[in-house]
Image (tube, rainbow, N blue to C red; front, side):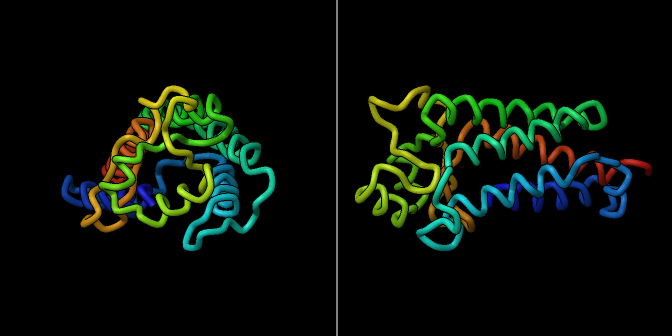
Length: 184
């Protein structure tokens, strides 16, 4: 959902800086289908608008596969669009912390509370894992790279996010702004 914020912010800033949405076609990014498959995988294995995923087997492995697909896309396109370096750095940080925690993203209880994620906290009280989230604790590793940041509960699409997510969002926003301003 944070990617929607990045896309919206990128489009708004793109227009404010004199860009045009039609200029995005000049980015000529290759392998967008890799990102589409990665997003589809994540939509299947993580609860989106319900408390249960569509596909509940192989979650950790499929999560890692989704990152491999994203990194393949980034590798093919990083020299075409420099903001993808930020996207790649953020994705790498996320993959690191997820890999160190058995395919799960540690989330701060405090950040979840401040984001108003009561349903996630309730689910985590019943089970140690909710989607790809596990509560931070002594057994989780590299918590500083986990979901420690948050959008407050009053904000539309409020949720927790990581430093890696923040880099991905900034990179995606810059990519859209740069793309909208291209070929002027």
